[in-house]
Length: 124
Image (cartoon, rainbow, N blue to C red):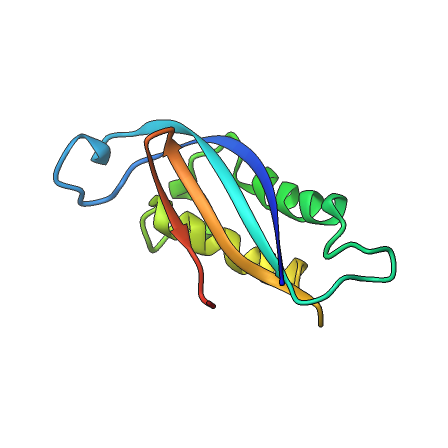
């Protein structure tokens, strides 16, 4: 079993609707994203997943989130753009782009700051 790790980041604004504190006001973050792709076998080149393929898939998702008001993003019109919901959004996007017989998305880590973040995964 292999876990392939790729990192990226994006900057965006948001606010948490109905939050009982200052996060209800518009503010922004430089989110740091780390994805883990789990592979069960290597390909004929001896790779679990080509890093370039994983980086490009993540970049497509980051480009959709970068430098925008996340509350206006179609995915977050009816739910808060919390780190947890952002992690689910990225994970589901990766499922569409990075699922094959040998590998699949395993986890997505989303950090709002260096000291606060969340990890989302569906499978162990």
